[in-house]
Image 1 (cartoon, rainbow, N blue to C red):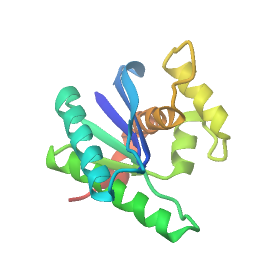
Image 2: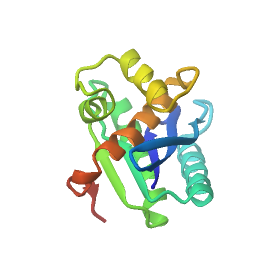
Image 3: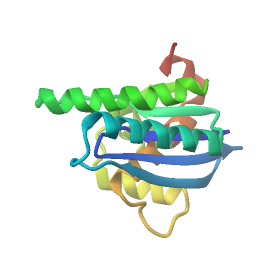
Image 4: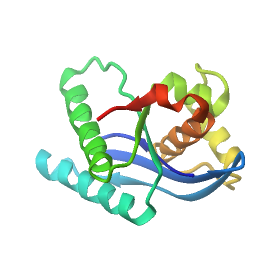
Length: 165
């Protein structure tokens, strides 16, 4: 099963693509979509949408796992990230790819086995699970991979996390 994990963001949106078969992971690709704060907001959203649409067409994932937003005290920032996240979801929905969302706590639990794990622990576990020489960079890409790993480890219960559209 090809699983596409996303750590949504406006400036940096991390992603990771894995193949999960027989309880084994094979890394396909990871990276980040980066937008410039010098670009107008609608252009930044279009860049994210277009790039994720390309990636979905290229890799044809069977599932997309997205990190759910957590409350941010800066309302303006939270709104921008929420709108950016909506663009990520739209790109997957337009390709008819099943979408699943997990909280940061669930992603940590599904990757490390402990919901209060530190960011470095998650990154190191991603490295170990995927048999990588180094922790994936940028950090957002490691977070995207962690979302994909979490989904793979949650397959028995995945329908509980499915976004219906």
